[in-house]
Picture 1 (cartoon, helix red, strand yellow):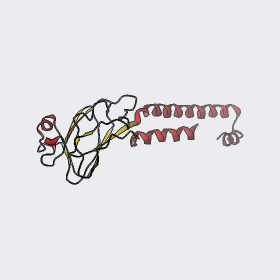
Picture 2 (picture 1 turned 120 degrees about the vertical axis):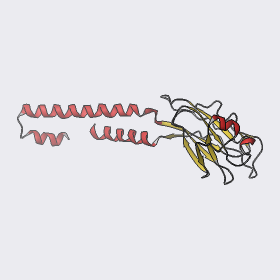
Picture 3 (picture 1 turned 135 degrees about the horizontal axis):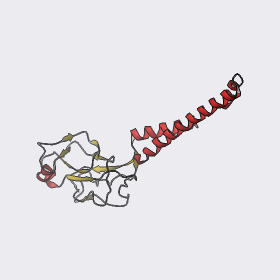
Picture 4 (picture 1 turned 90 degrees about the vertical axis):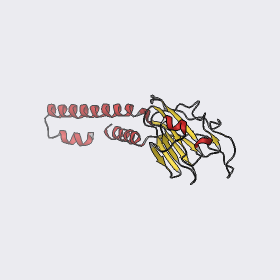
Length: 198
């Protein structure tokens, strides 16, 4: 950039060239400041993902204890064709009712973004499964500036009461953090912008 500017400088009087150089550098500084601001704003972009092996062989009553689940985190329900996931109200959660469900899923790999603070309630829609304990309440707090931390791989947040017919034990929450796609795009654009303009 400076080489091109020096060749441009030859045809301008010294005062005009100096003023142009100051203006170009000033604009670059402003762009860098804006990009730095955007980078700082994107810092709380890490979100945790919690895997839930959704089966009637597990006790989900204490699943959320000890977890710091925040807005922006996701839960992934993994289940077979005999199960489903219904999001319900607190009253329907207590009564195992699904007729007034908020959302229902049956794809076997349901990813739900926890987008607002509060408690969300989920039950299995298969007859009798909710009554046998196949229901989960997930308390969500407002996101802080530090990413939430899923339970360590060695902990046992889901306790199976019996093993399923396949002999599988429900999985623990994933310890891997994921990068939120929109905030990741912003952070990437900021880094590219800083590299280009500086």
